[in-house]
Image (cartoon, rainbow, N blue to C red; front, side, top):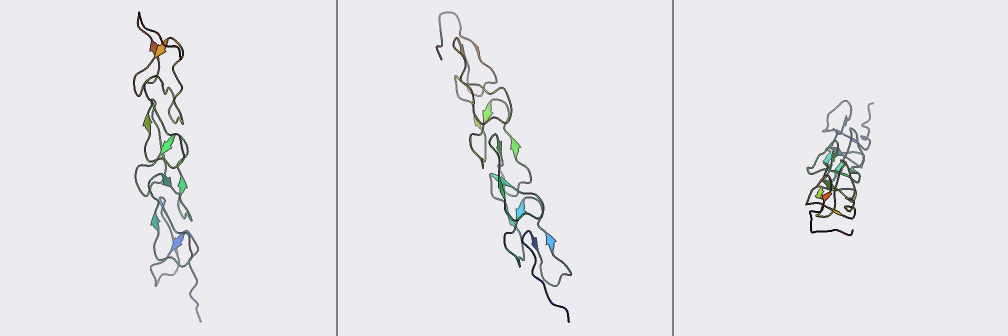
Length: 131
């Protein structure tokens, strides 16, 4: 006689199925015998048939649930930790010239920047910066 077999982690079955279905990208199931897959939370992502969701890397973010791939932080912004849900604008006096940055370097002496700058400009006549 036929026996029913548990679905493996990363797969699910609604019942009455001839086989288990893999969780779609952006979802996961960690246990066996699952009847559904859970969406990855914000700041995390997964591929198909995932048994857990991964944190977005430094310099990347996932603002929505069920993400299949993290988005890269644009120039002038940064994400200093894993699992970010958004990127932060580089503050005044710092800059972000590359995308996917985990930090914003300080402008060199004699130069300054505004919020979310991609480069530093010279201080105007009569002003200085010693950073």
